[in-house]
Image (cartoon, rainbow, N blue to C red):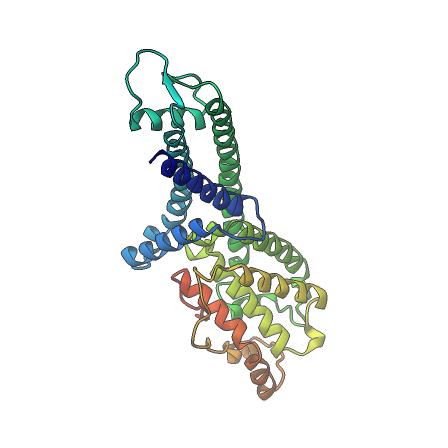
Length: 332
């Protein structure tokens, strides 16, 4: 039986270390297998019980993050407790001669990984002493990396909200942004904004790839919702790129770079979190754009161009649906 405990403990520790390292240190790996399953399960449960109510759904991100940290701690704790249970006479009480119980093993493993110092028990001389040092080292590393992981995620969430507010400041729909950016001659006023948006989007895309839990941080207000902001921004750039004559475009390199940053963001979306929508979103209101004096190419040409980006627009809509939000429409 002790051998089974030892094998079970080692397997639990290996699973914990792999999942923890995969999630926190492997930048391109996304979430570890256990973390991915736990996160998607909590998200589906929250969407079901909250019925996509933004205020309640906004708790999903903190719940996913808290549950992930607790899961790692629990696996580490259980793994070391089983390991010590599998080592014959590995623990001795500081006082008395009572037999070691399961409570004693969990207590001993707990104060080792939480580095609480000396407790009522000590490791027996030999292998148990070395394993105790290793257990303390894993506890210190997990706590240090866990705190760093937590701070990085909260910082990225703040950046998400800030970028969303900046984009929504230009307009609540693609048509509104296009009308606001039109200066009567061209869209060159967008150049500085596109440079800023592209840089921030690139950073956020990298953070989403490194910290998949960011997908589950749902904003209460639509103004701070990044999925809506990215959809509005990308749709406005599609209007300019595919429906407006090229001579009126903003800087072509900035336009291409910003759309590439949106592509990178969509690529990072976890398949467990989102899937492209089945239907294609409706076309922008080009009539309102003509009414604002924005020159457009012939309808047949931009309609044909929009057919080529249907997959992209389905991804944008899928991201909105996963976040429980509608496709942004022009209200003017």
